[in-house]
Image (cartoon, rainbow, N blue to C red):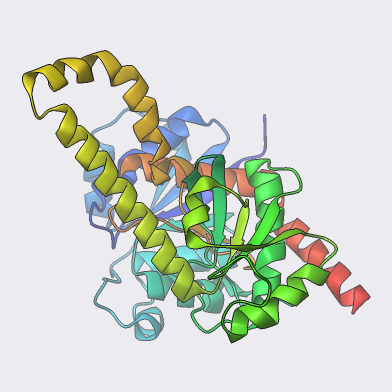
Length: 339
């Protein structure tokens, strides 16, 4: 039997907590025999939710917590003061080696602080970026960073590019992934001070497949596999992409049901539309991993459904099996030796 992957799931702090989180965990262990899930939160509520389902009871364990970090809490204070929260307890389990990864839909700021302070960054990592996989016309692209480091330096972006390449090649299976930096034009001389400083550094990297600049309008077309930027721009791109996709799907559905004839036509094209709409569904690929830490921390949407929760748990399993942390550490060692 394959080695068990142990994941901690924070069931509190999200819009659909704890119901969708518990269902996601149940569905995950039903599908994967080598997956064990710790669920953190109030024991009474979690027992009530688990009682609704039939599942392998030996592979889900409740870790009782008495506090919750909400979206209104100040991140640093929340991590320091709410030591028995579902988030802090879960992060500490990863730090202590009791689990391989942690998944949460809770307070983003607190998760970023907790990940870097409690789990800790790898030696040699300057900043830990959030890196979601986003659907594109050519499959998926990794957007790195999308929310963790709004004031990044050029050297940070170079590390993001390398870590993103490792992730795309080993987790997503894209060989020699194309790396691009977000810019306002394709020309090398364009961009703000950060882009102008970073571009030549990426160009000099022999261990990544750097293809130059990418404009935001080209991002959905999948012209690059790893899209590098600092967190402010990355977060705007991610939120705009998600919002536009939701609006487009909504308008298509509205148009297809606007008249009796269009409704009939919708029934005929329903199978094809189902696959098309699936293309816009970001939850198919799990959450955004915080790369460069000593253990895996994955951020999922605040309104995550059980499907996104399940896929994020699978994401941790893939991360462990492909030894992504080991590969990142190898890159850091080689970088140090070549310095």
